[in-house]
Image (cartoon, rainbow, N blue to C red):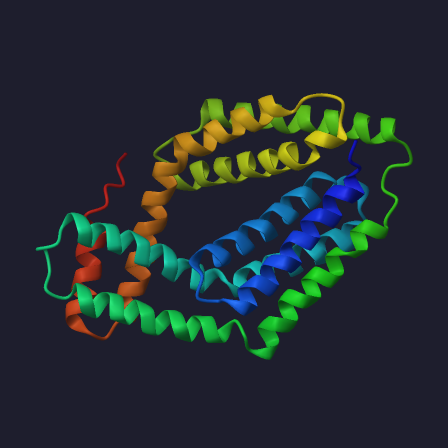
Length: 257
């Protein structure tokens, strides 16, 4: 049976390996996405055991990992925009004569953002976060297996109850509430997925239920994210034709669903 130290060691190694892979090939859309997810997963696992960590250490490490994730955020946002606009162009090929200009702009901006992730400050931010996270492996957070079992099962039960209550009363027209609900579901799913092998109880029900919540509200979240990204990006563009095309794509999104 795995220990929680095994889980954290594997997750930290995963982040480290993906960062090396990204440095070798920053052109990969998948690597950018996978690296950000791995960092987010590590934060979710830390959140689950935060009550056994020194508060100041947890807050500092959580902040460091959040900043590491933000290094790649603009790059990921451009990749999301590109993919969304690509699908729009495929389904509406005659809606504009300026698709080429749009995608050319994306590619130029992506290279700029890609290069920005390699400046010394951003490299230090990511590397320092990884090194700080390694300290977790050194901590003896749970004296015995039964101590971890008691803590974990109680925390899963509490988080699941809180999530179900939020799900029951969420207003689907309130995007922020939906967004927070999906974030809570993700955190619980990460913990259940990675700590499943450390406990005698099968946590697959938590995984299944949280995944269902993420899927159910995914369309709402994606619509709002894409709308906002298109809106912000359009305001940065000087080319009138590209600017108008971005607004046209933005206005095609139905936020009422």
